[in-house]
Length: 226
Image 1 (tube, rainbow, N blue to C red):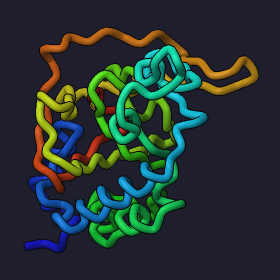
Image 2 (cartoon, rainbow, N blue to C red):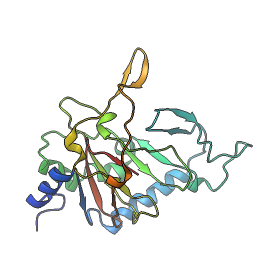
Image 3 (cartoon, helix red, strand yellow):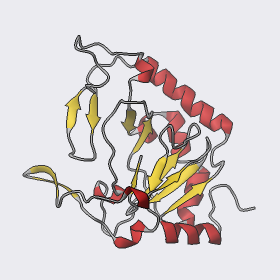
């Protein structure tokens, strides 16, 4: 059996064909528990002020998630049930998440994909609270993290079982082969996209249901949603 994180020829072939790869049991139950417990500590120390919500649809940032707050400006429910995500530099600012991001298994994974000097450029913890957070429409990660040549690869680690009912990933297999659909541009005119977001047939998407500890590897041009 190859070392943790190393990809077999069959796994590489699947990734090249479909644009995603599910790696079961990538992280142990202890590693998952450590990250969940650490995030619980961070949330406990969060005061709820200066919050924002981001939408992949129109790239709008709001002062607080209006769905989480009542008319009196107070949270409608417990703080731990009101946070959408924490990011985007957990890999730099927190030792627990840094340990995962720069682990030997992650390093071997990127070596298997042909990277010579991979760099972690952002990280986030997504809570998937019902009814809370910005809309995440079908998109490609390269739209927002576009390089030349395009080298973005996303890692999505399940810290609990992810199913159709609680918000697993969905993807269009092979869609990465059609190239980048649109780019986000930041210039003197502000932040905007070079073209409108296309519409997709939801029947093309397949659910990527996984168990806790599984890792989903995502090609930067793969069309996916959650």
